[in-house]
Amino acid sequence: MRLVQYTDTAGAQHVAIVEDADTLIPLVGVSTTRELANIAISLAGTMMDTAKTHKGDTRIDYNEVVESGRLLPPVTHADPAHFLVTGTGLTHLGSASARANMHKADNKAADETDSMKMFRMGVEGGKPKPGEHGVQPEWFYKGDGSIVAHPGADMPSPSFALDGSEEPEIAAIYVIDPYGNPARIGFAIGNEFSDHVTERQNYLYLAHSKLRACSMGPELLLGDLPSHVEGMSRVYRDGKVIWEKPFVSGEDNMSHSLANLEYHHFKYDLFCRPGDVHAHFFGTATLSFADGITTQDGDQFEIEAAPFGRALRNRLKVQAERKVTVKAI
Picture 1 (cartoon, rainbow, N blue to C red):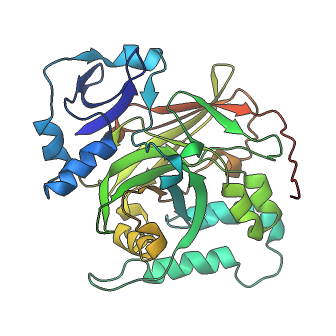
Picture 2: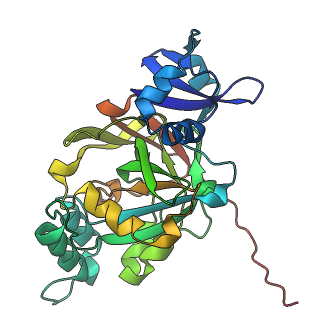
């Protein structure tokens, strides 16, 4: 089962079950996926069963919602400061080679780069036995809910950015219950979107390069994530594909288990604040930048994978320069 969030023509928010490629079934008595999750948590139930109990009788045109620009991200929070967006890198088999290519100018005579060391550590200890904790992954903070672009909307890139390129990834979505326990409510395909030129200057700029917009959805996949996911990532310019490449994800293609990635994120009390929402990106091994593509204003990103329904599309929009003034008071 997959869910979407959208607004009606009056601006009210709704959540709906995706019946097929053209049809949505709005839920009744609930208007957001977060609200649905809170009901499921209170009843000790599942998202899928809870959605079924709120399933309405009406059908609406999915295409009309998309074409009118009324799709929302698969999860939202009324207060964006309580929606944390984070991620992990070097988690996929092949991700180290992509990172190495990106940093090849820095790979002088070192026996092993820090990226390769981190990747090797994940391969050797990223999938611990049940009940055990494996090696920590690379981890980064992207921002709060204000940086999540709607499906189909512009992907803003700041004027000072040196690059703005896609990263096709799977994001897991969580709601923290009233007792501080994370509850995973589903998965979404995502565009983690980063500034790879800034990162390539020096690996210590990784934190800066990740403070960018992102997008996810439009559909939230309920239940378990398939162990093998195949998708396609494309970049369009003036309506024509200038780059496309398949990508894979899921635990079969990763050096870390999902359980290990989740443990090392939620072991921090800061990330177990009741009522918060988390979107946590799980990394990728495929990006156009590694193949020499330089994106430009107006390019469109398209990321799709069959388990997640409709493709995620966003258009790159370079923002006007904003003057920064700090006042001493």
